[in-house]
Image (tube, rainbow, N blue to C red; front, side, top):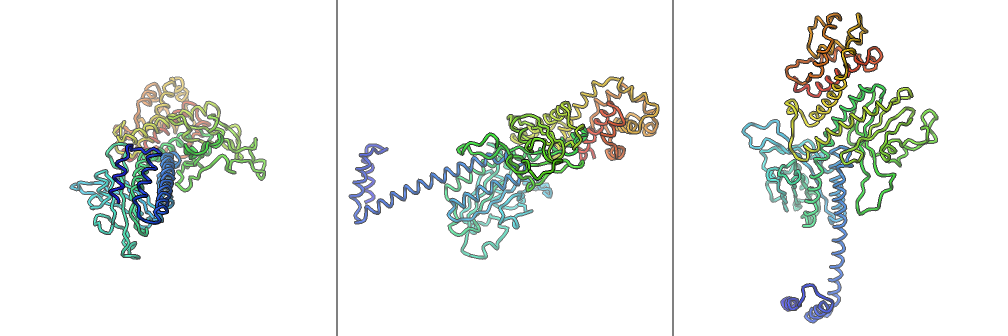
Length: 573
C-alpha cells in the first residue's frame, strides 16, 4: 500500500498542491486504506500534526525571546559575572521546565586559566576552573579544576574549540565524574552530556567551556535535536556578551581610582556612590515602556569615611524610580524631608541628561551621569557634600569631575576594544606585569597626572616665589615641599631638614622636573612607604587652609604620583 501511495504522490503534477490536487490525493489515500475506521484514524493523525506544529511554533517563539534576553544580559548584570551567569542558567532551566518533558538539567561554566603548577615539559600549561554552576552542582564543583594533562571531554573541547555531545555517559571513559553517588539510586540510569566552547566572535581562541548534563533526570535523558540547536545558539550569544561583561567587571578598579581622585581633589565631598545604569529589560516584540521607566540603578561602588568599597553581587539590588525609597514619605521629619517632596533626583538626572543638585536624606546631593560611547547613560555618580550649604559643589567643580569622568570612559573604550579583539596593547613595560584591572586603572591615573601637569605648566615662577619667600613657612607647606623634593630626588636627606637649603631648589628647574617626572621609571628609586609616613595626617583640607594654591597643586601632584605607585607597586618592587 505504501508503494501505491508514493506512486500517487509522484503522479501529482505540482509540488505545491492546489485545493483540487489535495482533494484528489486524499481520495486516493482513503481508497487504499482497508480499515473500517480509516476516517477517524486520518482525522486523529491530522489533528496531531496540527497540534505538534502549533506547539513547535510556540516553543520557537519563546526561544527567540530567550535569545533576545540573553543579548540584553551583559547590560543588566551590574558589572558582575555571577549575575550574568545566573541569568544564563535561569534561561536554560526555564526552557527545560517548559519544553523538556520533565527532564532535569545541570549546567556549569569553566574558564581557561594558566596553571601555576604546570611543568616546563607540559604541552598544555592551562587548566579549566569551575567558576559557575547550577545549585545542585555547587557542593560538587566549587573550587574544582580540570588540569591540562587530564584526558576528558571538557579538555578536548578546550583544545579543539568544537562541541562534543555524549549520549551515554556511563559508557564513555573520558567523562570526568566528580560525584559517582548520583548513580547509586538507580544503576540503570544514564545521562547525556553536552560540552560547548566559549569563544570570542569568529576567532579560534577558547575562553572556557559550558557543560550541560541530564545525570539527575529520569529517562529519557537524551537531548532532542531542537534542544541541541537552542543550547548552541544560547551559548554563542552568551559568548558574544562575555567579553563585554568581563570588560565592565575589570572596569570597577578604574572606578575605585576615580573615587580616590575625587576624594582628594574635591574635599567637600564626604560620601559618594557609583551606580551602574541599566536599561529596563525590554523585548522588541513586547509592549512599549513608559518614558518615566527607562532605567534601573544598581549600586556598585561606595565611598564612606574615606574608605572605598566594591559591593558584592547580592548587594547590587536593582532600584527603580517607582521604588518607595525615592518617594516622599509623610513620616519623614522636616529635617530629613526633601524640599520639593521628591527623592528621585537621580532619575531626573538620567531622563533629562542634566546635573541635578537637591537636598535629600538631610544632606546636599549632586547627581551626574557619565555617558557611554553609544550616547546612553553608563554610570551615575551621586556625590554627597553634607548638610553645610556652603559646600555645595560649584559649576567649576562639577566641570572638573565631568572631565575626570570623560577620562574614565576613554579608559573603558580602550578596555572593551581589547577584550573584543582578544589582543592586548601595552603602553609601557610596567603594564606587561599587571592584571587587566590594574593596567587600565594605571592608565587612568596617568591621564589624571598628565592633566595636572598641564595645569602646573601654566604656573609661573611668581607662584613659586611666594613659597620661597617664607623664612619660616607653615608646617603644612614645609611638609609638602619636603615630599616633592624627596620624590624628585634633587637634594639630600640632610638638606630636607633645613628650609633655607630647600629654598634653593624651588624655582624654574623644579617645574621642569615636575613635568618630566615618570613615577614608574626604573631610574626613579621612590620609597612609597617613606612618602606615606611623611604624609600621614596631611589632608587636602589642611593644605587648603594652611597653604596656598601652588602648595595645593603640588600636594595634588604628590597624591597622584603616590596613587600611580600603589597601582604599579608590585612591578616597582
